[in-house]
Length: 453
Image (tube, rainbow, N blue to C red; front, side):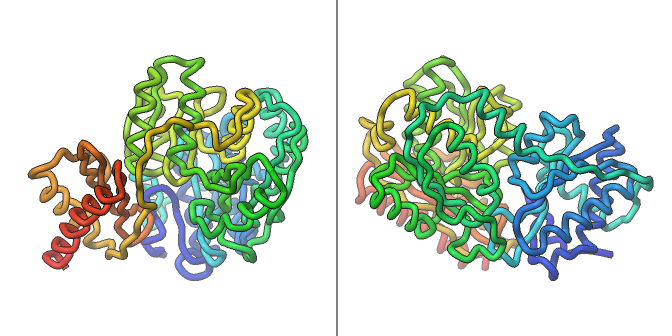
């Protein structure tokens, strides 16, 4: 059986449930993954699943495939992706798999995989694909057991974080799996909790569980302002990405959240290395440097950021998309609930309002992410050609697409690793300069697409 190659993406496996990804496909992926674990000397892995309608059946098929290779499964039940990661550090397993399609619409599903404590990505996922196609799997009789991990997960937070009681918090889970743990831990810390859409529902009846899209934050913003709350925490479908809204109802971008965490971290860890992706503001890197930190710009993608953090010994990392990775006092992976609690800890420690945490930051003007449809077959070719043209007269950073650097701003073009699309973002010191930089890059892009396409 040859599954659709398109489901094997850069950071995970993902497709439309019942079409490009079926129970049969998931079982074979389980066999390939179990074979990989066994060949690496592993004996047991954890499995969790999100609240999508197709997830329980996919979990069953996955476990069937894994145990057929002789590898044991620890079933942690409905969970967040960070809970699966947590199990790889605390439950003595040799890897973990989460059945989820993250923030994608309800008809999608997929798998995020770890070997040991490392996320599988890039070549590792393609190795799984080749194994599925070849069908040469180990055979054996693995066992399956249940493990309720939520209590040990919450107890870890209680032991390792200090939040003064009384903070008034709105939460929006987007009907993803954040609801199985978030309200409980906030109440244990003495917060006044105002819940929105925290009951898991795989149809996502209220809005897509993606806190980077402004319209998905409209209800939590309204709740904060109307009820006079201190802060809002919003989560994506599998709770590995955070969105935070201040007491005035303004959303805080992922790079500015990373800067808040960085400045707090550097007070106790001078010289710490901090990783930000290529979409982050120039203010992030300059302010970390001014505060005595060592900022590194790196490729976009939760798996590649985690990998880079390990190689650089970084204490913290983050992306515009809301993935925040704490090695400091944590395990180095992205957990939106932990990131939200760290934010509350900063509010508690400083006594400041959320909107006051970055006062004095130089004013810049920036676009959100701009996505342009572009076929997978040519998107990297287009990016490379634009880089060549713009690099003739400008300084460019080419670790992930092309980021054109100017004295007063920058423009980014990169190929999406998850969609047939190009991603652009721009920042400058003035609105007029922002428009000029954008016009330059988009004009070059348009010319290049017409030449290639």
